[in-house]
Length: 114
Length: 260
Image: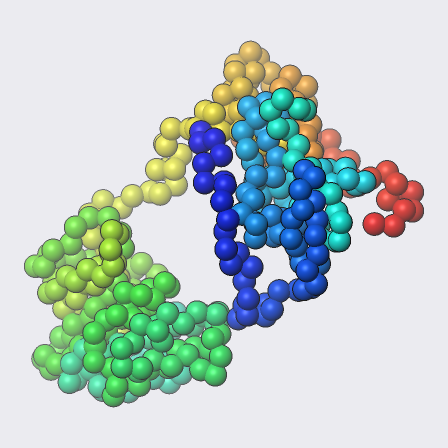
């Protein structure tokens, strides 16, 4: 199985503007959340997974046994592949959790730290 | 799918008449979805998706030169070309083709309607390829005029393949994580089943499947199939994990009245 290939790098324009059915993306105010201590730009109210994608971050956590990188898949809160640790909330599904100013996210399961 | 000549919304009557002078596009689009590649495809601006992107496309047969770009580019394969210039009871219909096999001019193929039912046999007069590595082929077939408007495709493969069977017979990916929360591979589950485990609950205790964050929400049905195959029983007889609401993980504090 591929390990983390294609998971790095920026993905410009991942936010869909002027969608023919959904219109403009919700929220808007530019805020900052923190991923493993580093600041990450986000828009208030968008799913955390969307903010991660917009910055080119595709890895949400590392698998329990093989420590392979895993990332959001279904985007509707079913597959649980987008789960990350949100300070004060514990494990959350980032595809369903709206971004708020100053949220602190952590990537669980990195090799070397449980 | 309606295929009467009188379908006025799509301007088929006009197209039918215009086809006497050569190929003209016929739009068989009934999906009011945000989709307009046909409008972009037409070099003559003969196709309009108006007043908004979810509207059905309208074709001006007078402005259509029958180039077939829209036939190749419609993602729903909902456009075909009609050409009645022979005027001898036969029409030439051009349909997109993206299946296996290598159709060549002169082949006699089964011509099918929108539901895949055989209409007649027709000879391929022309094969054009559109696009790069995996091109959409435009096949022009000659068919009796009375079925011309019903033609939506050709069946080129002589053997009808059972896709379900193809999928079932494909070798399983043994390192595929069947339980994604606890990262348990299909191989691991099969080995455990070989050791004699015959219930979902025992399987869960032995391998930790279904004990992760999603609590078996995602993996349960695949596990049940595996278990049923190992036990030689039907899947629905294999029971399930004990279902304890809530379905999604909820902090105890939330249940105690804390606000989100």
